[in-house]
Length: 155
Image (cartoon, rainbow, N blue to C red; front, top):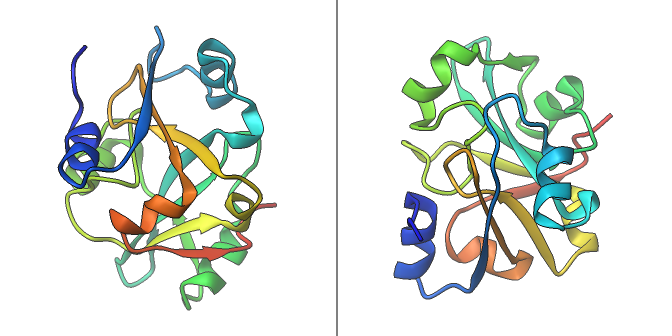
């Protein structure tokens, strides 16, 4: 099976994960992905990238069934306001395409904020860095790979 950049990073750090694959494209929803791989939607997360007025990027990881609350998100990173980046800018900013964006292996070390709901689970699943690939890993291992904060960021 093909390894994505995310999987190579996890392998290098000897972090356990379960790889899930599915047949989908950039229009496949997170709920559909969860159903295809057989993981509960509550434990399935999506990665959203935002930009502030002063052109700072922030990466938010929220449950696929929820919507990022831009006001709460902005407060969590001490900004007046943030907005979603344009889809055409995603690859250039993160190194990932829409539908395959992961909080691990970003082009730069942008601030990453996970929704507080991750504290409810031992394991969560999110993009493996490519459309069709997901990684499921222990929440307690995420900080071994990336720096992040936890905040109430959903509507």
